[in-house]
Length: 129
Figure (cartoon, rainbow, N blue to C red):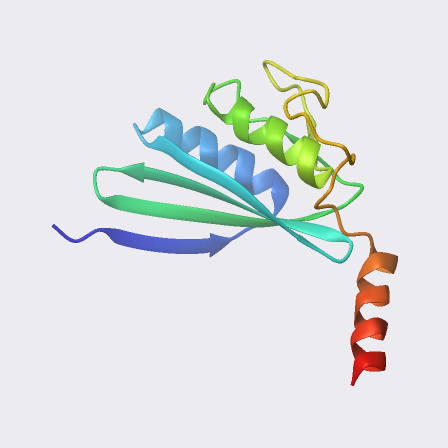
């Protein structure tokens, strides 16, 4: 069997409604992942039914708060706690919020990239050339 794979970019409010609709239609949550960029995070939510995989991408500015989906996908709380602690993603109303105690890490939000940090990296690379 060959799986189907789709990727769609959407805004934050649309994502919540889309994920709720997918859950009601029998889709399972496969994963949620985040990637840090200067001043924002890219978050991808993946769901599947059978061999059909659908991915939904949102861009979340650092100071923007998003709603949890753990109220209808309980396992999402693990991903959401991880993104909150490692990337500084603001997620409200997680069903079990570990309040930044999910990992034992020395640095708070180690993967979060502020705009000024990204500029420093670019300048350092230019100096090395």
